[in-house]
Length: 319
Image 1 (cartoon, helix red, strand yellow):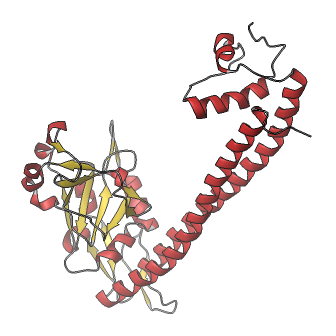
Image 2: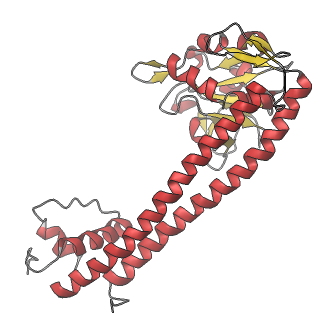
Image 3: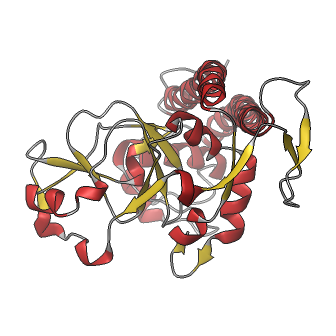
């Protein structure tokens, strides 16, 4: 017989539907009017209404605490990310010595800088390379896994590093066609087009030949420390610059010319390395804490799922 609103708790049904969505990939939307046929076909055994309400009350209480813990972890992660960016900003723009002598930069939005710093436009200290529009590729240019070269995309860029677990591969012809965008170690990749614009990653562990898709650009300097340059792209000053220069067309886009003309503060080459080494150490420490808290969020999610499963299916009873 059909299940009606008098025989089932909507709150209990919400938890039961959660299991259905998780285990059967079923998309269910519970509105005021129940889809009784869908419920009847999805849930064949359900307890009396009083028991449903008892289970729902218990799960409401437990899941609320789990969700609260998740929110606390998520907030702490955001605070850690903000702290990391402030640490990077201070290190790359004010040097590591608190007592360093300062001078007026002559640029309003920069303000004072260490006296020995120089100001250069990116185009004068680094090269930017991207895939030229008439050399974009199509599905026909893609090849089987490991057959030739990886074509990197924003999806490979995770937490400032590269993830090669899921890659797209391009033919040898398309790879060789654009030698200027052959990727190598010790360069920075920046997303210039798409919803993740400004995301950057530092390349230091390429598994094989690689190139980039049209969303990315390569930033490389032969005269400066590229790791320092990478950290500079993570600073608050650089992110503010990106956010005011991005063009909101159909797809958000950062013009290469804007990046080329961006003013960057440059210490000595020795100091660049010192700053990069310092930030490697400090950011690694922060990232470990973030990673641990992200793992805790995943574990809380798994615990919530198992809790719902055990009580909705009757494997455990509310005492």
